[in-house]
Length: 298
Length: 286
Image 1: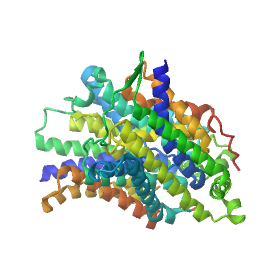
Image 2: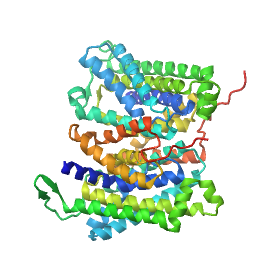
Image 3: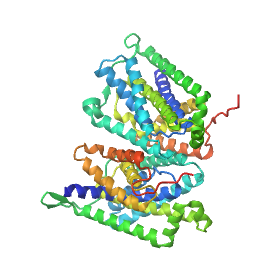
Image 4: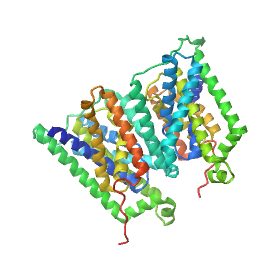
């Protein structure tokens, strides 16, 4: 049981990193990203392949995954130069689908649908199974703390004011002499970097990744976390991510109470539940549980 | 070559009706509705129920599928989108994705995830030298062309069509001029639902029926609509044929599973260089 809780907490950590990254892109700057699963998967596979096929140490591979993601993030957001915001949603979603297709089809590199086994882990061998779980949990939460620190600093810095300015009205920001395109690309790339690191951490944790792990469903869960917690509020979405995980895992136990539900229907019910809650939150409490803090003039 | 053209036309025909529905809804409500794919799936399953469980004729199943889809998509508007009319396009987009997942999951819950098909007579493909096609495929192309003609006539000559075009062009102005915009919105949802339901049946004939069938079509449909200039039904028709041809031409040197990617690349290139689409006029930003 305690093992189970530790592994759930680790997953919550991955979700928190992704949600913080999305909050930077969407909550603060207003850039829609529906390709979270794509960036996450790209990070996971980059780190996995570098350690397995190229013999890199995990930390190097982790950072490489982040940097590669940053480049892709910059390219994807570059497409938004002349775009309406909602077209960026289509572009990012398409990006995620392409990543998934490449992972599925290029099996000479990614091992295709069978999945990629990864046996490289930080500090592997020196700890027994139980304490290793706790160690990894701590490692993930150190990263969560780091990402939280960086995003909070950005939010409170003058940089954060520009981000919110772009979100509210990019024309005003442009008129005030801010290079909006430059800011957009930077913010998107930094968010993608965090998503890549989350993916790498995930890959070395589960030790077997396959394209099925990176479906649009995952992006929806992260969106749900941010909307639930309150867009623009970093602390709120940490709670949002935990709540979403509680719903996902909680519905797992539904099967114990109601015997005639099989695993397939259960996952459908879970998705319906998450979707309905998402619509209800947007309808009745669009600012989320913890609304964005208002800034006073210092 | 003839074969490639024909297959391209067939691909285009399959995505043309949803592209028209998508672009019409976008024109009036100003957000990309991601749930249209899910309603194609609804149409496909409704047609399958009518065809295999009730044992109805195909044309009767088509009408059944269209009515069910129109009813459900109208319900989705009443329950979900109508209370959010004043929300931003991003919010509506997020909501429409949630709707898509809910609808798809309900279908999966009822019918399971297995691949199913319509009760069709097996027909032998007709051959001319190296060129082969089936009667069903001719029917699909014929029906889609007929429906496109019908949509054009409705938009151009009927009072409803004129009201739709006016509302799409300038919502506030249409309202001031006494057009009942809430009726126009409802009519657009219903018309979109009819088109999506029919395309669900056609896809069921052309391919197989499974819960994700509509989701896979979302990107090509968006590509067609954006290519033709979003908000323009005529553009969507031409855009669909072009996307269909592009998918088929690239199929010559790319794995067929990358079809979706073709649509995406078209979107990306187009948005870079000509965001208003091939036939659209530049949007004037105030």
